[in-house]
Length: 412
Ligand SMILES: [Zn+2]
View 1: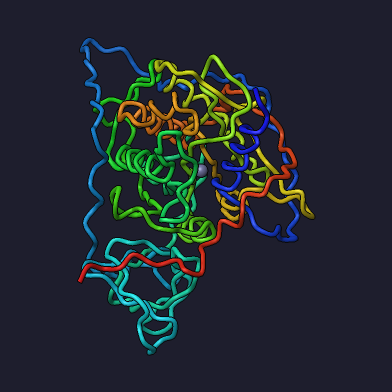
View 2 (view 1 turned 90 degrees about the horizontal axis):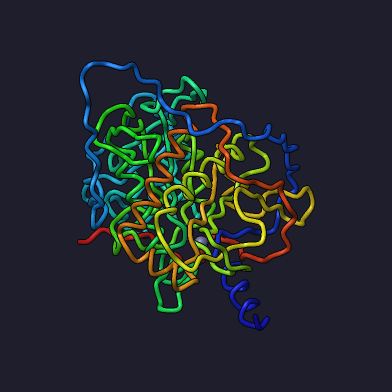
């Protein structure tokens, strides 16, 4: 292959994807390697009965469900300033200073991280990576989730999960296919499908991976998405610091950043799904291994001219700067097990053709859903290939919101 196009493609993905910034001087915790994979997919034990239950499979929705209606304003018990606020129905004015002039009427349904409270005002960290004040009477304010011990015995019904559709807004479109399909749109669609799956109970056929109508897996307790809205209204800029801060403020149990890739190195006879883990949070590597396994299972029934990296699977990139913190900002800043899924190569037209179909996007979403269940409620180590963290000398840009970033406004 001629070299120039590859270099160009590589630059595209590095500037398109999750991003770093000048590395802080924090010391990366030592990575404790996981034991070799010995566990297959955990199958829930069932007792044989005389009744035969015929599972009903779910269909593939053409589109994700519409976003939930905006809530009424309320301070939930236990909220003292830290947590998550959702802008209430009708929108809410945001202020730089308490008692000053509002600079925007934020759209109903948007979620921000809550930092502190002063009288009837809550200081929030917005999608534009900036602090602002909002009246407590204009939001639903929720305290951080109670901490739970993930692994075998963890109740999925108590899980707090943040789903992060990568990129967004007019400036940060992410990677693109030759035909012009852009990552921000596809990522949001997949993320919304994951949210839809998480918000209602299901059963899972762990032999086939099929998601069924049923109630063996309860709805997750609290599900947040970092870009709120439909394909149109959810297309706004959101800084990487904000995305992590929202998950931290919710005290989430797990976070998944949904992406699709560019800059492939080799042709493959199978999907080149990569999942990035955090080296400083030991459980993140287990999460990534399970995620890769579930993505490959979901994609195995699809045909494409697959491409990938020379080293594929669960992997981790470290900044070359002092202390070698995580290269990707969202993995560096999030305080809970977080992974970045690069499910398919959108820059490869053959895979972009799949990403353009609801079938494939739903398959991607069901993989993320199954991986979350396995990661949070079992001690599975996953069987996908993984590799130790490597120093990465790329330049993905800061990932911070631009000074021109705008918060979506309430329709007047
Ligand atoms: Zn991306």
